[in-house]
Image 1: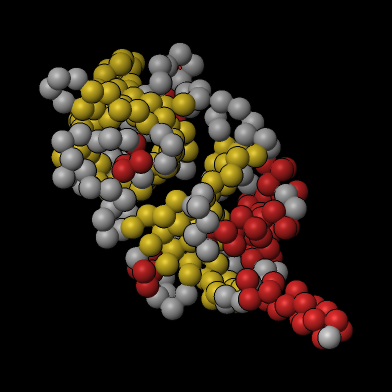
Image 2: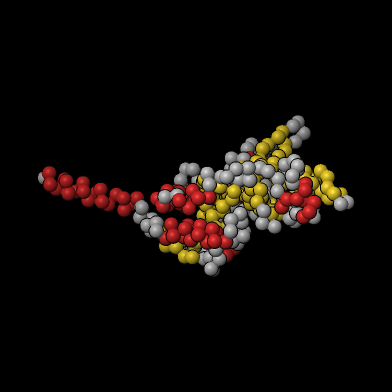
Length: 289
């Protein structure tokens, strides 16, 4: 009897892990967005993530990079397959330090969901040297909707600003926004952080805060880190290079018109003759996911 019990226990120990990780996933891999590193480093990192994905048990991965070492903007979700999960990563550097952030994104088109999770590294070298098991666990937990995973429901735009008299937190602003002619997109993450990607390839880290008064509630978005001439694409390059040396942080003061529309002013530098001055521009942002 003891031998039978022992055998049954051994079988349970063997079967249990298989049950826990029996879910199979079909994944389309679209690569990385990393505009602050060179092509060789981009290819190395993109290949690394692809290799890590293919080595995870029960993952069937299709390479959708089409020979590209990196992409300059987020893939068009209209091209994603409803029968597969779509995976890509966005890597950015903190302008004020040597830290790097990698944002992993998984889109489940069939469920109209986007899951994202960010990790911060002390240097880019740390991204390349991260143990395979750590990266695999991060990605697996992300796909399986770990409790720390951000889940964006496109159907309700991650929150319902329209039904609220005021925005209770910056969480409901999470998503991707567009609207300015010189900016490709603005990505707002949970936790009051985000980044701006300019059409010239520059990337700016931003902080998001709420500011309320008796009349209205403002969304204040502020540039984090040192100024960069590329943050002023409206100015001639020679003027922008000089202006960036002493420029104050760019800020946006916006209000929510509805679920997916922010409007207000952008405090930046504007051209004045052959020079520049502090000024404001009227802007409107639209959420695209």
